[in-house]
Amino acid sequence: MFKFKLIKKDGKARRGRLYTPHGVIETPVFMPVGTQGTVKAMIHKLLDEIGAQIILGNTYHLYLRPGTEIIKKAGGLHNFIGWKKPILTDSGGYQVFSLAKGRFGNRKAKVKITDEGVEFQDHLQGDKHFFTPEKVIEIQETFGSDIIMPLDECVEYPTTKEYAKEALDRTIRWLERSIKAKRRKDQALFGIVQGAFWEDLRREAVERTMEFDEHLFGYSIGGLSVGEPKEIMYPMTELVCELLPEHKPRYLMGVGKPEDILEAVERGVDMFDCVVPTRNARTGTLYTSQGVIDIRHAKWKEDFTPLDPECDCYTCRNHTKAYLRHLFVAEEISAYVLNTIHNLRFYLKMMEEIRKAIEEGRFKELKERYLEKVKVRL
Image 1 (cartoon, rainbow, N blue to C red):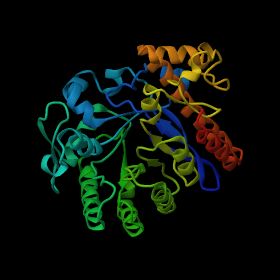
Image 2 (image 1 turned 90 degrees about the horizontal axis):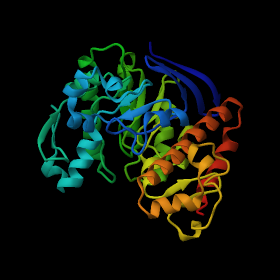
Image 3 (image 1 turned 30 degrees about the vertical axis):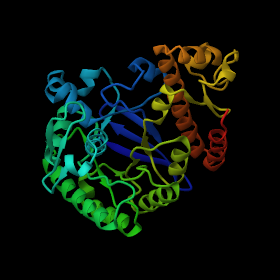
């Protein structure tokens, strides 16, 4: 039912194939973020057309709204949202910490973390909830997502080594409880490697997580892309990849920008998710083969050329920069849709080219070409 096949390597970059109950995923893969059962400003038909293989759903948000019971009555998340391809759901742990802090101020006053679980106030009404490792698994089993995550504790940047070690220990204990709670065999559980920003903690986290290897389909690298500089993120990613088993997929959570994905692929990562392409689309920042465009800029007012002449998406085949700027300035909803189609297609096309380049042994050349693109601001 679940299988990961490593097809080719180019240096440390990996070309693979991931088999799930809802379809095959070619890796490296970028997973558009469908937080509340939808990728913002998109419909599933459009996601299909631009080449999305899998989407990510958010346990925290879906648990709050529409709620686990509604999704259960619908026959699971795939049925509820009408998406036939694979779905990955996260544990909701990151949102528990970040959204509670964002709405209510002092994290420690509103989020109580114990070995039993985490008590928090939701960001909608401020109601109290309690997530345990067992409850998070139960929620995701109700969803029926293909790939699921255990509850973990993701620390902020900066943090102390003492607290990072405490969070690591708790994450391991929660993983053990998650494995014991898991019942469904048609879902794949990933372990999450924490350890924050210290090499020895990361090494310990990998070693202790791998003690449960027989129960884990893959490994997630957590606790990065939380505000730390690239000089920390890239070496930590490389270190963890070097220690993880070759025959299982690796998922760098919450990453990232095109340059971050390229750097991580070069270090051996297989799976990515991030809100950057969709969020930037809604603020007018668009990725193209010539560079990054701010479509709000007045210089596009009379530019009647395609957004990106090298892009095959609906937006670029049918509309000009001048029209896209007009829609955005006029605050038309279609601006967000057209921009999102393009940005996601840019990401997914980049991943297609990455896979082909690895197969042909020219990934480094492709990486340098893309890095030059994203440096340019038009």
